[in-house]
Length: 207
Image (tube, rainbow, N blue to C red; front, side):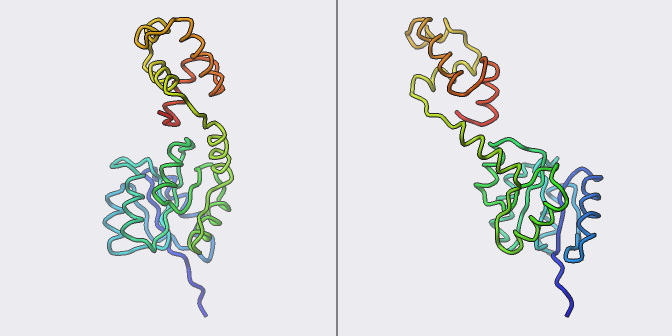
């Protein structure tokens, strides 16, 4: 009896990456990469007629938001599995994709063995998150802190680039009090200065 081969499609606008992934995957007898796409629109049109078992999706595509596309595909084709294969290691991006129901998430630094394991496992109905991504999730969740309403307002103004005197004037507090809050916020988030704090807040979409 002939073994069923998992049909895989790849959407990635970097042709060399796309070709390399296809070649590596096709070395395995139980996989077959049948189609490759460099745009989301080409992928969208193709899967309307020819749905693969698994779609490997780079979410940084030139013609749209890969996260929104992932959500669209999962809603329209519930039997098809989607694995994000991306350079994005930000918790905010990972969290967005997991929330829309992506079946797998790997970084482009992952090994071929990890990728093939992910394909097999999502095809079998599991969710696969690579160890590197699991570590990012764990570290980010450990960083979650609670903020008072005053701290939230001050954090927002710090991120907007306001100085301590400016924040103090806006909140009708003393500059010394704002300085104390600023130091407290730096300690809460484990960063050394306001620039690092603003970068972290933006990257993790804390506000």
